Amino acid sequence: MKRRFRLFLPAVFILAVSLSGCQNSSNSSPSAEEENTDSGPVRLTVWGAEEDEELLRQIFDGFQEKYRDEAEFLITYQPQSESHCTDALMADLENGADVFAFADDQLNTLVAAGALEPIENADMVRSANLPEAVSAASVNDTLYAYPLTADNGYFLYYNKQYFSEEDILSWDNMMDIAGEQGKKISMDWSSGWYVYSFFGNTGLTVGLNDDGITNYCTWNDTEGAVKGTDVAKAMTGMARHSGFLSTDDAGFLEGVQNGTIIAGISGVWNALAVEEAWGRGFGASKLPSYTCAGQQVQMASFSGYKLIGVNAYSQYRDWAARLADWITNEENQELRFLLRGQGPSNKNAASSEEVQNSPAIAALLEQSESSCLQRIGGNFWEPVTSFTAELLAGNPSGKTLQEQLDTMVTGITAP
Image 1 (cartoon, helix red, strand yellow):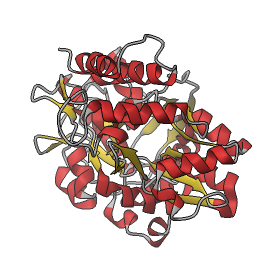
Image 2: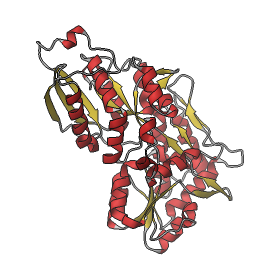
Image 3: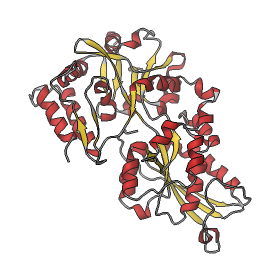
Image 4: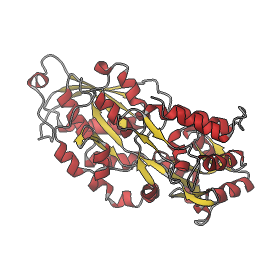
């Protein structure tokens, strides 16, 4: 997911586990050095989302039961944002986490840095997971990580007390309804991950060059059915609308809970909290269209996947691989859905009745027709944030929209 968050301070819990009982694993057997526990426990550090702590406790308990005759373990969990995982890992790769969750757009960087090695039981992982998730975990058809979720995208949450099924087809209508009620619909313009939705179905493009580092971008084009300035004008109108609010994830949830926000664009990670706040009014749908260049443009989205990686420098890499495989197996992906509402990448888990009946997952699947896999270089984010900040502030620089678009694109495509 390429959402940008501040790093969490690493509050830690430690599971000291004496393990007994052995069953066959899909991973290769640990090396002789790792199987020899006379020198002490197998020490593994796991990075995961802060909200996953209770879930991971249960998953580690299951791992303990499965391998309780194999070795003594000391598993240390540290909360770490999936979207900032690579930044944290690259700061000290050799001493970084043994097992870590990360967003799929970071895969190329991790592979290029030598942080990940090909998965040994790749055929089994491929057969167990959705093809799109396998593709997101692969570079040049080589699998480097374990698929964890297939839900790292965004869609529309709306309160049915205010909007009909017809109302939610139009972003403009929704802003008008919210404004008339003294309420807001929200979206995070500080993140290019969301801002892409306005450009994605216009013929204006952005993506990664063949070097895997730099970007191409045509968001400032002056020709075509939809020009860059057409999108910028539409966004300027939204920024001024009384029914619109740009806010981050925390602000969205706060507004939902206090009643000021009655619709917003976010992902499945907020499904449980939004449903709790709105109760029977809880609704989820694909993104609406918005008015641009005199026509209705369906809002696009980036799709994404969460993956589990195994640090190539791990002292206990084979055991780390076993744990990564365990975290992402069918049973634990089902548990993740039940506890966290996150959509499985495992084929069997994803086809379960519970998952298929989830409004948030259904909305994400509906939106997938207008989404694409995110592959963007690091220079994308800050120029987009600067561009939207100028629009939201009412254009204090006095520059024309074309000048602002040109500046943004120059930054995005910088070498």
